[in-house]
Every structure is written in structure tokens, then in C-alpha cells.
Length: 435
Image 1 (cartoon, rainbow, N blue to C red):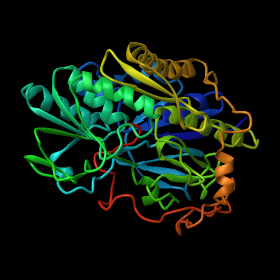
Image 2: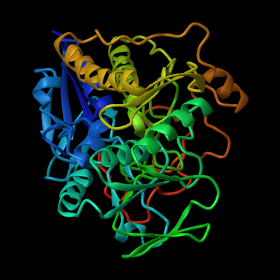
Image 3: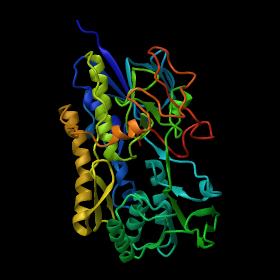
Image 4: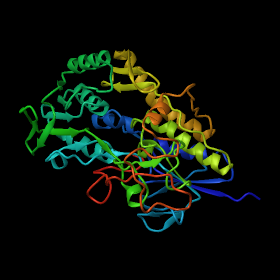
């Protein structure tokens, strides 16, 4: 009789759900998903929650396999030596393998006053706090959105479409990922919605007070409601657990997503740093990483060699209100191309992507293994980057050191903990696992 294998997945976001569902491919594997929230947060719709057009929450019964046991709690420490996790609610949960998929949240802003006088929206709780504030504000109240990336652009467009007076402060380039053609298209749409876009030199926020937002170029904006979308951080659970991380706090792994400290721990999503070269924080990366992490665990259970990372990107899609959007196509190595689809077709493509994500998770729950991982012939150029940096599949980037508290169960292959990701001794400001 085959002995049952216990796998714990911590973090019920895009990566964690795909990983948990995929792990049910084996009948002898018991899967436990630990997540701080009882419902799945469709994070790429949080700007719609702020704007009032979507609740951004889905019942786990729609996306999680029936065989997956859901525990609503938070892991406070990973005990790698004893193969167990400690829960905030009390007690521990043992495991044979652990999938670390804690996601990301709002980073602690270094700008004076930003923590006290701005509103982040990286998590469900943050977005839910902001929405009633906007509802209670007069339509003429000034809204400033800080951050020129996708979250900032989407939030600015969503609010402007409801009739709000919105200023988008980019702190540099508008949509830095976008090709110049795509960037011009986004700027035109924002202009048509009445959004004042402040980009280029002199647009970095230097201070926020109760009444004002001050920029590096000397300009001062009124602080009616200021939404902060500039930067993300990851929970410091790996650091506090003595595991090796990169400088941001992401768990350092090899190219099979296996922790460099412990062969029984794998990472996926925003909180993973394969070979110290993490992929772009995105749902587009998280779901394949979740599937890859599950496949690594399943390969180890079967006594097989796990496959290395070989992941391609399609581009970036950004909603610009409910009636327009942009799909920016990219090279498989995640470099934007000249071609994009904008306007109404761009909005429909974005909505198709949002709905397709839920379908992928539901399909994987019903029939694990249906989520396809597309291998790119010849790779995506990642191996060239690894070789150029002197990094091998089980090696460590230059300047990175192994955590002194790492597990000795397997011969360590190096790691990183160059600095703690936060100074507050806990999670990143307002962040959370699994979103």
C-alpha cells in the first residue's frame, strides 16, 4: 500500500490555486491550501472594485478542486527542519512538501508622509477601504494616482470614467513596459478621459502631507484623495523562517523552483526568485509558475528529475476604463514589440483574459493537468542571462550569500539574505499572502 504524501500550499492566489489543483493529479497526495482569506481575490480586478464596477472576489468552490482542503489562516513561520508550518490561529500543520506562494502586497513607501496620507490598493482590504472613501467624496474632489505602471494607469482610467477629476503622477515614464507606440495610445485614451498625466523629469513624489502632494520639480498638488500604486513588496515569511531570499525577500530557488536550502520547499508566483532572476510580477507569470512548482513536487514524489523553468510571455494588457484598453504584444523574453491592439478591441481582449484566468483555474480543478505549459524551442534567452551572470541551475548569483539558518537536510546550493525586506518586523505595509 502506497503511503500518502502531504503537500501544503501557502497562498491562495493565482499561483497557489493552480499549484494546489494540479497536485491532485495523484490520488496518493493530500493537498492543504492555507490562505488568510476565505474567498479567492481576482487581483487584476481590484481597480474595478475601487471604481465600483466589480467586487473582485470569487468563491473558492468555483476555482478550487474538491479534494483540496482549505484552511483559512496565516503561516507565521516555516519550520523546515521539522517539516511543519506554524499558524497564527494556533497549532502547526505538517508537510512532506511545501509550495511557497505568498504573493505580494504594497511596499512600505520611503516618501515622507506617504504611509500616513495615501491609499494603496494592492490587496482586497486596501481596495475595500478606499472605495467607501471615494463614494463619500464629492465628484469634484481631486484624486491623485501615484505610479505610472499598469495599476496606476488602470486606476486612473477607471476613476476618470466615473466622472472624477484625476491626475496621474508617473514619477518618470508613463507605462515603462510599453512600446512607444503603445505608450502614445494609452496617453491619448487617458487624455480623452480627462486624466491629467504628469510624466517625465520632475514628477517624482518627494513628500505627502494631509493637504498636499509635492513633486521633485517643485509642483504641489492638492491631496484630496491620493492613491499609491508605486511599488510592491513581498511578505517576509521566508526571511523570518531562516530561508535564503533575494534582497526584496523573495524565496531564492534554482531553475526548478526548488529552494536552494531545502529540496522539499518550492516557490511560485511573485514570491519566487529563480536563480536570483525573478520573472516580472504578474498573473501572467504566476499561473505557469504555480503549475511548474506543482510539477516539480510531483516529479520528486515519482522519483523523477524536475524540468527547469522555460517560460514565455505574451505581453501586457491594460484596461483603460470599461470601454477601452490595450494589449501590448511582446517578444517571448518579455520585451515589448511595436504591435498592440487598442480601443474597444483592446478592452474586449482584456476582459477575455480576466475571464479566461478563472476558466483556467476551474478547468484545472475539474481535470488537473489540463493547464498547459508551453515550452519554447531554444528557450526564451533566460539561459543566456544565467550564463552571462555566472549562474547555474543550482548555483547562486554573485554577491549573494547563503542564509546561516538554512536547513541541512540536503546539501545547500547557496542563497541570499542581503537585507530584510521591511524594517517593521512583519509583513510589507498592508501586504498579504495569496491576495
